[in-house]
Image (cartoon, rainbow, N blue to C red; front, side):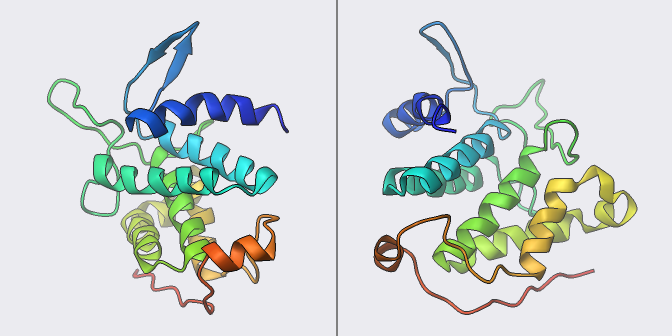
Length: 187
């Protein structure tokens, strides 16, 4: 598991420095294409490193990624475009989870995790808005939305405790305490 930290560090460091995400590396060359699918994957690496190291850097990385997802990719209806730039004048949206979960679904996972760790309602609202936008598709073909269903489950059935192995001293200083929220899905 510790091998993920150097890899995550290689991607998080340029993001912290420049505010631009590195999509991939070829030797020392960086490919900087701003894709929705890349941001939540780095966020997942941040959570793993945060759980292992309990350092604020990794939590801050996940938090900044959530803010950038909203700023760069928000479509306005709860869903997110696949890339920051258009291809042939069109910005497309990938809704379905396949072998690789969609960036939309992983963004919802990020928002709900941040809500439970920080108590910031804006993250719950983003996750709920996304699930509500996907509801017609979820009802018809739930097997195509495994990660989006996890977001819905986490909203409907809040975790009893969220600590990711973090020490109580750190958690009390940096994370808001809160009571169980109610979910507000619209069908």
